[in-house]
Amino acid sequence: MPGMKLHLLRYFAVLAEELHFGRAAERLAITQPPLSSGIKALEDELGVRLFERTSKHVKLTAAGTAYLAEVRIVLDRVARAGETARAVAAGLHGRLDIGFTGSMVYRDMPAIVRAFGAHAPGIEVNLREMSSNEQIEALLHRQLHAGFLNAGTVPPRLASLPLADDHFVCCLPDDHALAQAAAVDLRALAEETFVMFSREVAPANHDNVIALFQRAGIHPHTRHATRQWLTVTALVAMRMGVALVPASMAQAAVKGVRFVPIAGLRHPTVGVLAWHESAVTPALRAFIGAAAEHPRG
Image 1 (tube, rainbow, N blue to C red):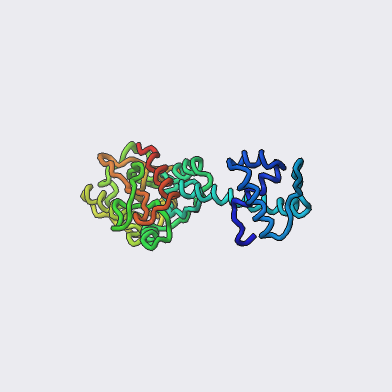
Image 2 (image 1 turned 90 degrees about the horizontal axis):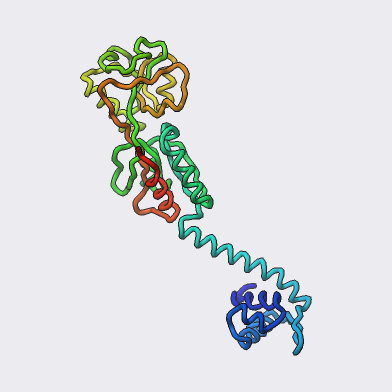
């Protein structure tokens, strides 16, 4: 139907349903003359008669019946296209690519994604596990819509929203002498071998642990470097050392470890939802809104 005016197709479809010019004009909120001229223009363009008309009745021709089936498909697609456009504009339809670090599985991220999915089921959320540095690069190059990452601050051009508080605890093998303690003074671990988070993967994670050592006045042996908190915890379970990890890692339920509070210290672990401030789509705006409404305490 190239070049066909959409309103003429609507005129035709309504008249085909009503088979009465008066009732069809009333449904279309127009008078009968423009309806009659519109149907004639449509028939002239097609070169076929769509209706048989007498003073007493209106009837579809065989060509009109066949044409009606196709017109209904076109009008339905146009209606769905309009609904899709309005949903996208309202942030209720589309696709979001969201990055996350492994530890975010045990923090806010799953609850935020679930809440958003319930609010906007028309938006497809695709999660990609990436390091914090990888996410920042992807966000700066607009290869991700947003990312859950371990950082206290983000580079210029990125905006961020802080996540709910978490804090560091000691992660010890379950047969360690201090594993059953109510709290552990870090100075008691000064001679231990520590499993550390690799600084090149997430500087904030590494620097936060170092800051805790400095506050305790110790310089521990650090030997093993990993890319994920879950790997840190697993190495402790294998008796490869001890570690300081986010308290939320207890949810991973790794066998062979104990999580013990740090005596006299409650140091927060950093975490934000970040996005490019110049690349906010309606869908992303809705996602940020869902994250902002998530409880932080």
